Length: 338
Image 1: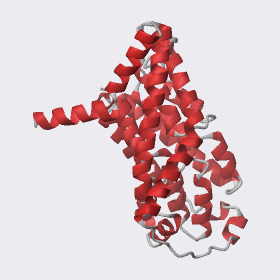
Image 2: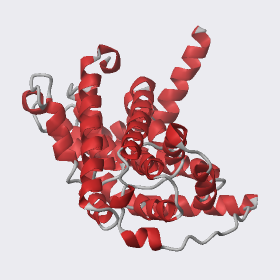
Image 3: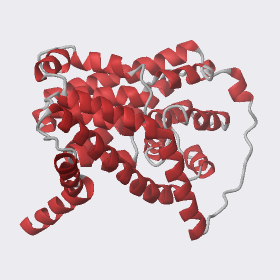
Image 4: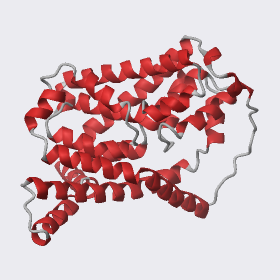
C-alpha cells in the first residue's frame, strides 16, 4: 500500500503538478534574471511563467486524449441517447454527457438549441447546458494538479448534482412554453452518424487542441497575470477581510464577482490557485469558478435570445442559489478545506 501511495504521489508531482517545471523556472528566474522567487517581482515572474507553461502543456495533452474519446459522441449520437431517456434518469445522463463535451457556456447554446428543436425534454437540455461548461474531464485533471484529488473530485460531483437538480426543477415547473417559438419551429434534420477512422479521430483531436487553445489562450494569460498579482502583491490581511473566513458574505461576493466575467475554467484556475494559497476557503473559490463558467454574462445574453425572460430568470436563480449553497457547504466542511 505504501509503495502504491508513493508511486501515485510521484506521478502526481511529476505529471500533474510538474515539480520538475517549477524547479526549472526557479533556476531561470534566479540564475538568469538574478531575482529571488521569495521577493515580489521574482515570485510574480516565477508564478506567471510556471503556471502558463504548465496549463498549456496539460491542456494540449488532456484535450487531445479527451477529444479522441469525444469523437465517439458527436451531437447526433448525444441527441439519440438523450431522446430515449426521460425523467430524472434523463437529467443524470444529460449532465454526464455534458462532462464529455468541451464547450464553454457560450458555445453550449447552439447545442442547447439543437436539442430543444429536436424535442428533447427541457429539463434534460438544461442539465446538459449547466454541466457542459461547468464540468469536464480536462478540468478534473487540471483541478487535481492545482488542488489535489479531494477538491477536484468534489468539484465535479457537486457540479453534476447542481446540473441534475437544476434540470429536474425546470422540468417539474413545466416551463416549455417559455422557449422562444422559433426554436420549436426549427426543423430537426436527422443526419446519419458517420464513424471515423483512427486517423480521422487523431486529426479531430489535433484540431480540437488547436481550436480550444486558440479560444482560451488570452483568458489563461489574463488569469495567470491576475493570479500572480494576488499571490505576490496583495497582502494576506486584505484577502482575508474581503473573501476570507472573517467575511460571512465571502461566498456571495465571489459569486457576484464571477458572473460578469467570461472565461473557461482554464482561465479561472490560476486565480483560484492564488486565492487558495492565500488561505481563502475552498467553497468561496469554487463558487467563483462556477459563477464564471456557468453564469457568464455573454452566455446569459445569448440564452436570452433563445428563452423568454421568465425561464431565463428561473435558470439564473436556480444556478446562482445552488452555487452559493455549495460554497457555504464547502466552507463549513473541514474535510474539503484540508
